[in-house]
Amino acid sequence: MRFLGLYAHPDDETFCSGGAFAHYAERGAEIMVISATRGQAGQIRDAGVATRRTIGQVRERELRLACQRLGVQSSRCLDYRDGALASADFETLVAELTHAIRAFRPTAVFTFGPDGGYGHPDHVVISDAATDAWERAGDATQFPQQIAGGLLPHRPATLYYAHFPTHRRRLLDRMVQWLVSREERFRGDVGFVKALLHIAEGARDLRSISDHIETRWFPAETFVIEQGESAATLFLILSGEAEAVREYDDGSTEILGRLGPGEFFGEMGIAAHKPRNAHVIARTDVTCLLFSPAEWAPFFGRGAGADLTGSVAEPALDVEELGEATTRIDVSTVIDRKIAAIAAYRSQFAFQPELIPKPLLLDLFGVEYFIRARPPRVLETEIT
Image 1 (cartoon, helix red, strand yellow):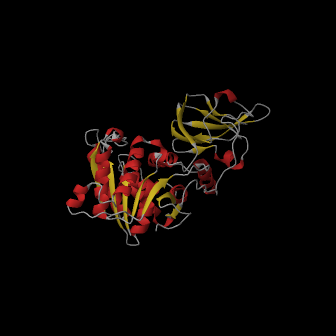
Image 2 (cartoon, one colour):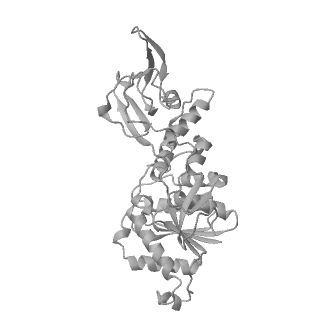
Image 3 (cartoon, helix red, strand yellow):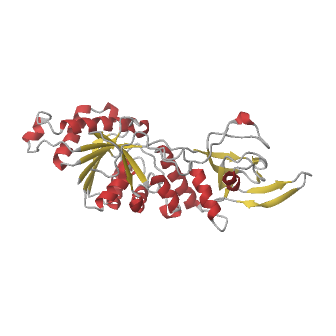
């Protein structure tokens, strides 16, 4: 097998097909990845790793390291500007991708679908260009200068689009299961918080989870949650301190404990689908990372019986939704390779993967989905 991944930015290959590439590399497949840009317009999540002046070079190095960790033998970046593929000369881009197909002669090509995965304009353009190149690479009348230069026409057997079916599952439900299974109350450090945030953002972008994720600030002496409110949100304290207080019918109160950075609260209520059994009050200014089924709706009010996010559906813990996928690849056996490849992109995802529980990683990234665009066929579980 010879696989060619044609994507827009460094890290696209890892999120879209990194598990499949690692899986088949272990079986002897020859794999090449080409990124149309160096990702010059991407985020810089670690100022010690890159600046805006160096980010393109850094991400190109990160691409090579990620591919090495996946077992991909060859990778390179073209010279297109990140965020501007739509204004590039389309025919020139198609010609370059056609040249890559004719030179590498893959059996399968991988790229984004026509929607660009989640609408990114660069992803949409690379999908159109890669599809066009797949069609034209086997026709000797297309880009004849390449044929004159010694390349032979070649049409790969298959073309696959990365697909991200929308899942109803919520990361907060998985985290609750993990938290309540622990013998001691969990408290994470700054590294854990950063890792969880980056993993959650990546899973949300890929539609692997349906959580609403946001950061909220609560001034000192305000109620973060009130006793009796519907349990619909999982909180992780990023900074500051809070206090759990139980209020009794006669108006007396009992302090249950203090909460600080790296600690979760609210999880027991979510797991049992019961009203909150205590207040949580900010004793200093507190910033929390929130995982909710939906965005908070201020018109629902506060207090016992209030539902801050509307009705909460039952957890979809074991529901898999394929959408339009024709190909489902279980990559659980190479999940360590895929997560290590994500972690190679320190400029984008500065985290330590070992800090995230492996069951969560498997649940979020253990399966990859594709649409077999050329030629179409029914559901398959192997790349053919």
